[in-house]
Image (cartoon, rainbow, N blue to C red; front, side):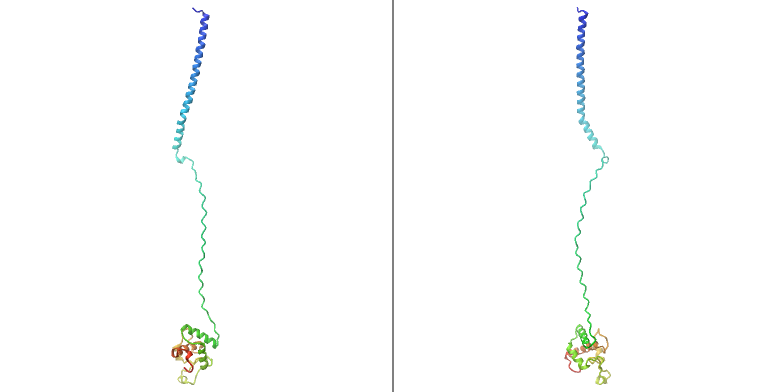
Length: 206
């Protein structure tokens, strides 16, 4: 039978062992709990991440901040093609206006230009020769003694034309005036062309 001192010693040792065991067990429980907590946290990370992604996908597009696209720089306008100015039509030449001397030479030359335009034959030499014979170049010459004068239709002007002949062979574009030197020449040459072929063929009274 144990005495009280030995019993106290045994109990004391037993108590220390139980306390140590309890402490060790407590430490183990704490470690297990901590490990579980860490494991639980690690296991939930993917789930939480997935939940965050899922929530982000469900955010309406309007809630997301608008991202404005930077406009591309405008292309420089293509240069306008050079357009050569249309060639200007040459102005129609002004008709040549001749001036004629107010003398026998000028009258004959003006008459020849009119005759050429009307298709009436004759040359300067033929006209001048007959004028000198008929009137010596006087546009106011008149014959008051020949048969025409006796009949009341005297010959007049440079080429001594009677009024009926002048009226019949007057050329349009010249004054209707037997005393006008140019009109007288052109009408006389028109008559001579119809009767003799040309004033050049007339060598005497006609």
